[in-house]
Amino acid sequence: MHLISRVLAIQPKRTTTTVVSYLTSAELDAMLATPNPSTWHGRRDRALLVLAAQTGLRVSELTQFTIDDAHVDTGAHISCHGKGRKDRCTPLTSHTVGVLTEWLAQRHARGTAPLLCTRSGTPMSRDTVSHLTRKYASTAAATCPSLATKKPTPHTLRHTAAMTLLRAGIDITVIVVWLDHESPTSTRIYLHADMALKEQAVARTSPPELGSVRYKAPDSFLAFLDQL
Image (cartoon, rainbow, N blue to C red; front, side):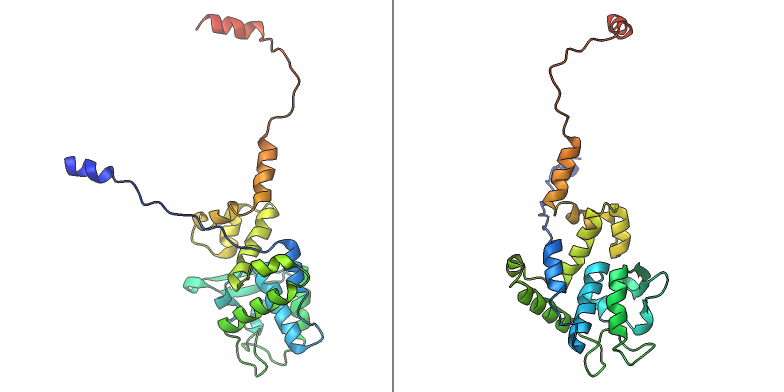
């Protein structure tokens, strides 16, 4: 029993919570406006960035998409073969559908051909996606200086998608499903990331400013107190 007591008395290891890096609306808009839509590479890269920032999909998932996975008609969504061999569908906004439609018009392929590809038609690599993310963030920093200090990665775009959903009032349990996390614990980092959300919470819970009012208890309540 003494040994058990000593074991139970051991303090658990303290861990630190990493504050996630994400892009603000202004930073994301600046970055998405950077690819040149008049070129083949510009249309592809814009489709890549918009898809990543709206869906929050992992870079490994983005590079595996086929043309058949993109559904841009009624009920627009993208089919994803995710982590742990789990299949799921992620809805697409009208803006993302428009960008993807423009890109698909450039792709002279169908079926299982890669959705996001190199000029030779092969799937993009993770390193290429990371390079393009850094490249466009660096270029966009000229008009949005705060991007220069963030050095975004593809995972930053995933965090940005989560924060966009959270700011829109989407319940954290829905975000868990959206991001394909194993549990709500994985998404708690987003609750700590946005100071604006914290300030809104304080504003909602702060008591209203009231003048000096003398409270007068009803007789029935006073009679109840007398019986205590």
